[in-house]
Amino acid sequence: MSALRTAASMIPGLVPGIFFFALALPVAWGAGLELASDLFGEGQWSAARTESLRAQSEEAAGPEASKARLLAAVSALRMERGGEGAKQELAALWREESTDLETRCMAAYEFGLADWAVGGNDAAAALEFAYLQTRAPPLFWRAGCSLYFYLKADKRLRRQEAAIWQSLQSCRDAWPLEVWRECRPRKKAGPSAASLPGRWLVQFYRAQIGPAIGSRCDLLPSCSEYFLQASRAHGLLGVSIVADRFVREPSVVSARENPVPMPDGRIRYADPLSGHDSWMGNTK
Image (tube, one colour):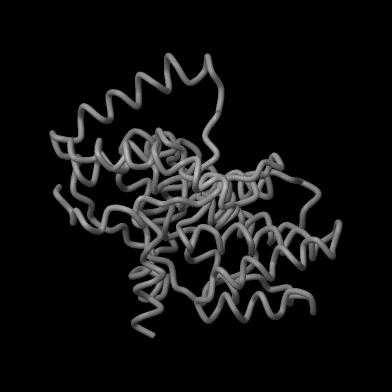
């Protein structure tokens, strides 16, 4: 169990219980998704994602297809693979009014955690939707507890959401202890001064160059995000890792290994920083 919880903690920002997702939806999984759900509960996220995509291809529409999309996206997040594409898929599911409400709530919750982890602007709205709309107690507790911590860290937003904040405070004593432990944010070290040049370069590229030339990177994360991660982890030494990425990119794409389907139909290839910087250690 400790190994599974360690794996679950790979999701940045929060530490959700590993079995929560598979058990949260009150509507039973269909026969086509039972295996995917079991694999997810065992922590076999790659296999769960593969099985979910297979089930999705067999169910062109309807509740089962939506659940398959949800499980595939969350499995991708658990693997730290295809994170941005998975976030987009979760956001789409959350906002699809034709989708089953509990599936939308679960998608909103998972999207909210992922968006919070990267400092996005939609986390509060997503967590609030899950908190107010779900009828499943496990999701109600976790969405509420996560939203509580999110608002607690932002005084301005807390004032804007005064009614929700009051509601959260009134029911916080009912949240189980394990929910408090799962949803409490982990402390993170701030960015080092050595990472600033890389961050500035990425910000300049994204603001001035990227919009002009469009998205050209076939890898996931994109080269700019990869540079940002390398700078945060290794400071100026991250430049050498990014240079290696540029050299490797053609061979990675031609090998067509670790494909990640994007919501727009495009295929990108997973090439995470963690697979190429172990020899450097963490220089932060």
